Amino acid sequence: MKRKFVDLNLQLPIHDLDKTRKMLEKAHELGYDLVAANLSPDTDDGTITYIKKLCASVGIDFATRVELIPKTRHELLGHLRRLRRKFEVVSVTCVSKVVARQAAKDRRVDLLFFPRLDSRKRFFDSQEAELASNALASLEIRIKPLLLSNGVQRTRLLSYLRKEAVVALNYGVPIVISSEASETWHMRKPRELAVLATLFDLDFPTGLDAVSKFPLSTVKRNREKLKSNFIAPGIRLVKRGKNCH
Image (cartoon, rainbow, N blue to C red; front, side):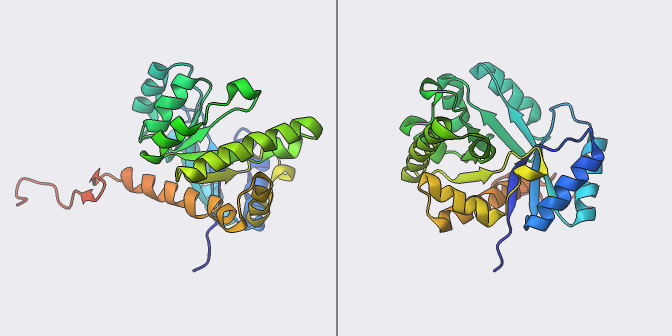
């Protein structure tokens, strides 16, 4: 079966529709079947509908995504209660150990992202991985920082990524590779991203899964959950009414 390729992190400039269209056309040209874009929590339904129609016009599927950057555990829980059923993909940027622990174990979280400003701010370790392996979250690795860095900064970043990738693989946590592209020149073909993943010690088949199988399964799972007849995993409402037996 032909792989479907996915980029779960396009930074679409939705205020600039001409540039947005060019990025979507580029994504289709590069071979992507589905993209997700970070949207403001307050994005109105009309804007979302318009972007979906724009994607359809260039031959690509679109998923809504929100990125949460909570400072505390309680802030994260509040965001999840308010936003989980509005967006198809929920990402959490883990800026503290407490937030990382809560996000890793919460089944409403799809993607975990760990800023790599310095070694003291890396929180993805065996404890977070074990929690995530029992939930549904994937580790998100973004490629744009690799493209924009050089020298010692790039070497340090690759070292961090290798360590995080090893931890994720050891605990069976899926890895999702995304572009985080905000310009067309940041964008790469999905197979090129899979090749770049070998720089942090993922083999090529695992890199391919990180831009196809794992992000696609995340979107499919959440689209099922967001349907009106969803009750629980494996349970659907078949009929509603007074005469149901």
